Every structure is written in C-alpha cells, then in structure tokens.
Length: 115
Picture 1: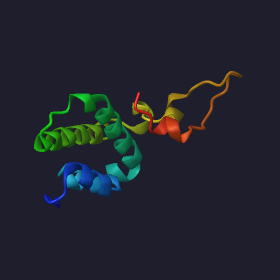
Picture 2: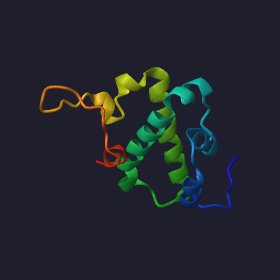
Picture 3: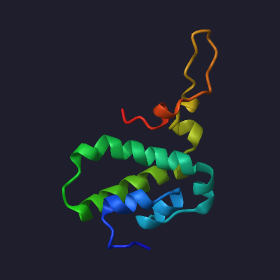
Picture 4: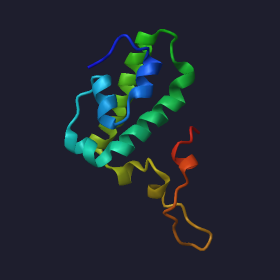
C-alpha cells in the first residue's frame, strides 16, 4: 500500500526488501521468483536506475511511473531467465584471476558500483 504523504525519495529510503519495492510500485509478482532472485532483481533495478537517472523528468509522478517500469523490467528479467544467465553480480561473470583460475570474491564497492 502506497503512502502518498511521503515523497518518492522518502519512500525509497524506507523500502528494504524486494517485496517492499514490488508492493510499493504495485508490480505483480510470484513469490517463488522473488525468493530465489531477490538480490538479483534489486541489483538489476539499481543498474537500470543508475543508467537512466540523468534522464528523469522533474515531475515526481512521472518518476514513479518510470521507476515502476524499471522494477517491472528487472523482475521480468528473472521470470524469463535466471541469475547465472543474467550475470548481474561479478561472481557470475567468471572474472579470471592472473593465475588462470576464477575468483568468487566480490568486494562490496563492485556490488553497488554505478558504472
């Protein structure tokens, strides 16, 4: 349920889980998809937002609609695919170590980078 007394920015600060985001933006979802992919969905949503943020219109209602679209798209990515195929996190990108092996360590700054 949306609290219209909060600004979009304030509301985003209060959302914690993938379900919180999906419910706030009124995106229908299957709990089994979210259960398996929650972090991937949120990271993909963050990635979409980071790429498009400079192009946001100034009107908050238009921004809400765009955020809803990005979240819906991020969720749909994992309905139609899976985390290994989508490679949201570097651990799935099989970055080779100099010795020819693979590293499964991902620093926190790489998880939240906006590049």
